[in-house]
Image (cartoon, rainbow, N blue to C red; front, side, top):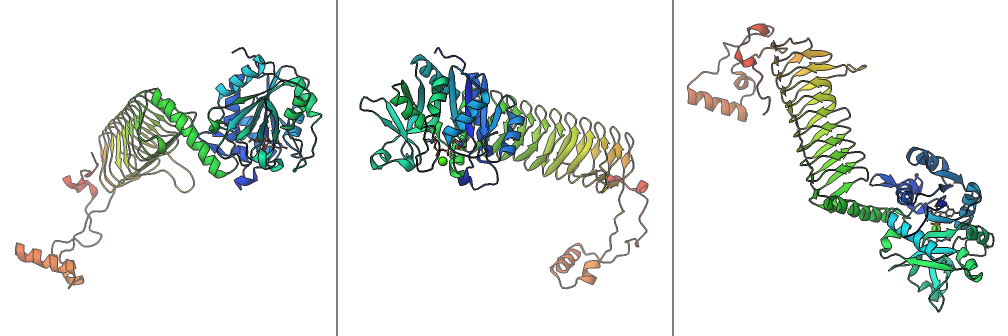
Length: 508
Ligand code: UD1
Ligand code: CA
């Protein structure tokens, strides 16, 4: 291929997109990590055009803001009134000033366009010395598209819009994709001759073809093999179709590079995600943003991972993760919520119904079940018992909790921040820890148990519980008296507790 860099790429994106029935401008609807417009701009990028101009109109502020944030190399030009695609191109040409060479025109709503097709278009256009080359497709249902009318010798004669077509023309199944390469000079001069005598009273870019043909200029067509590539997205059904096509392309590329995707149809991987060979992605999994998954890691089933790093050999099941770092060999899930600022160390674990936020969990430390850990730092080899809550919020401010190495936090501990539990320390199950626990100490913060013997028979006589208790007493030949129960307020001091203070049920 001998194509040069085009002088300009013009992206038409001023239309309203009423069929989306949306508050959001059509070209700003997103799938798999980019807006419709973003997908188009990514496709034209490899052309290396000297300038890229996006024609904006409806919701121009939102579209321009999006361009500034995602494609600062693109210029925008406002088409205040949508007087047609020809009018839009004229405005864009006025914006860039006199050009020579090739101008590529694409629509902002054809997100499946491939760079290779555009490169081929420019090459074919320039090699043939054409004034214009139109990308066309043969489609099963040409409804709504402009029809490609060919002369008896097979050459391109004109493009007739659906609404302006007669019965014979409507029967043509070759359609205009809305993607073109033009000679800049011929485009400018022919646009000046385009009339508005059509059903919409608009300046049609497509009429340029008829003008050039009448001037006996060379006009060509390039038929794409896969018509899905030039599919325009006009409504949400087509948006979903485009997403499915892009999903398959992305998934096939990753599988070819050595990633296992168990069920590609239920796996959505956004364009910015990076995966290493031998990563395994299980069904119903969505990988978003700048997520990376290292070799040997398994993600899913049922996980949504956003802007997170999954280390080598980590296992992440049924998990929602946002801006978290999951260390090598860590195990996460099922039903785990990792929020921003979570860093799980090597071989660590965040298990079922665990939520973490702004939490650093050291190598080999475990939060196996039913816990919340927020604004906390946990050292190495520590175990956080089931149902532990780091009470980080006093209603006004958030506070920090520090847990050392090889700590054993008993089940159902409330760690009221700010608080520090030293290396090797324990807390008793059911404790509310409000004071620091020094290294090696046992922190106990709970009431002593009272046992009122015979209570059920006295207060709940006749119930199934009372019957069961009576049966048990009969079998053991004991009396249901309560002589050993201490009165309220007689709880022994925590220090005198016996071995039952050992934090039980801390998970494994
Ligand atoms: C256009 C083509 C049609 C082709 C189809 C492919 C014309 C006259 N018709 O029809 O032959 O088959 O695309 O999808 O070109 N736009 C502007 N300013 C305007 C009008 C449109 O920027 O004044 C933009 C729209 O936002 C859109 C693109 O141009 O991105 C195409 O416009 P649209 O109204 O969708 O054209 P179609 O009727 O689909
Ligand atoms: Ca239209």
